[in-house]
Image (cartoon, rainbow, N blue to C red):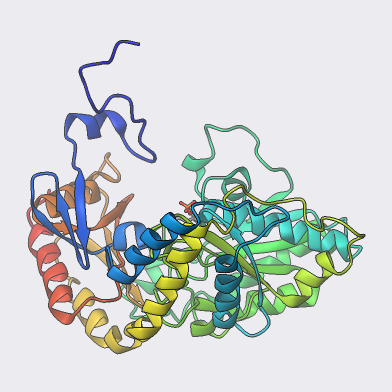
Length: 438
Ligand code: PLP
């Protein structure tokens, strides 16, 4: 085959405006701690932990060494009917970090796979309990649960769905909790909106509890613009789910591993689901890996109740891959050694004051924060939604700061190793550059 002249042509980039990117490419070639280096050699402060995933900062020596060592020792081991010690050790350590009772762990390779795995486990559990009519899955508007067919079905982002047909049937959605008219510029958790969880009662009334297997929500919705759970909201969901025999799944692909403090949002926010999905920060993103932690009750319903043989017909060639397991173990050790799950509490006031100092700057109509996360919402430009935040993203990148823009919302989620001076630099640069865009 004849090679095209354009070296960027072959790579069909994910969730990217490919044509625009390839006329004006921006590439990263190196990373260390809080910074990337661009292909032009510019140092770029990472205010997004890559894609919400390099929570301990980049290219950390203990993780790099663990991966290198394992690659030379055990590059791969089949995970169906065979095991290797690193995967068992990592599962035990994850179980020890999870909320009380969620002590069985299934490995995947990404957040999307974790979500589809969790949905399948929920269905299998209901069936094993003799509740096979419970096949309905409930998500939430503006939820992001990755890109598998299950994830986009329960997800609440129409653009992620409309190209792909009917998807899973028997899905319904709770309303989202974003309400700038009530909650703009709230620091931490909004007081208004807890009652929105009661919509689950309406859905139960509409379909019948006996048809509903599970509800899945992000405790804090990240990808659709940092939607912080209102006070009482998650507690109410938990209560309704328990009362109706519905399993509650927290998608913690973003929130687990210190992002809002503690190992999980469930612990920080004091609400325990039946199933937790995770990925990203589990290995500091150094090797792809996801996992699903399930309650003993859910696990035992499926495993202990099964006839002899395979209990769950599900798994991936790379579930618990040795390199990922090694990276996960080194990452968990680093989180512990450096106290990174405490950073959200330690930096909360400084972070909150800094990001809220953006109130009053040009175009900014809302700022919200939880843990080491902030959402900065810009007023959309008339007739061109999303353009303003994209322009700010480009300007920041060209001026040495990596932010994340979705629609007209800028999300910040820097590595947990950040210092106050980094916060000043991030917020200072945004304050300056947002004034320069139309
Ligand atoms: N679930 C949530 C809450 C996410 O934020 C993401 C990714 O951002 C995913 C699932 C999908 O993860 P992945 O891109 O690793 O498939």
